[in-house]
Length: 124
View 1 (cartoon, rainbow, N blue to C red):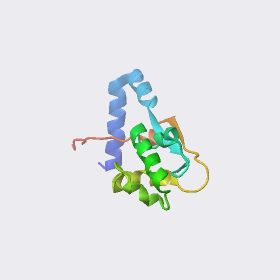
View 2 (view 1 turned 135 degrees about the vertical axis):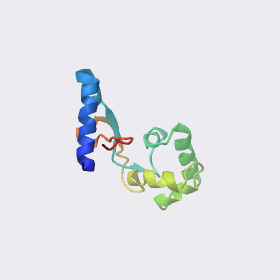
View 3 (view 1 turned 120 degrees about the vertical axis):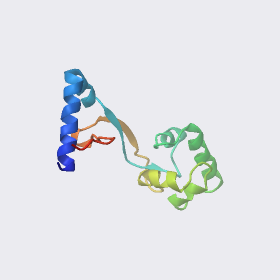
View 4 (view 1 turned 60 degrees about the horizontal axis):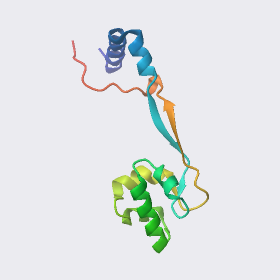
């Protein structure tokens, strides 16, 4: 059996096992979607707090940093305590130094084609 057929079989088996209530619960799942950007040199603590993985304390550290010296490149974020290369790469698509802050965070339903099957499926 091909990998795709095994995945479909596993999903169908799971839906049969869970019944109609379980299928509805699977469809009700949401994910967080981020759109827009945050201007590192102008954003408020609340706007910086919207970034994935950035809390109020980390947002305040960004503000404290930029009060001493404005960001000239978004890569300078790694110089702020608590922001390493890994965290920067996660945030990079949402960072800018120009224009207004437009970041929006929304909970959107998970589409069926986005559902991942984890674990192993026993081969027959």
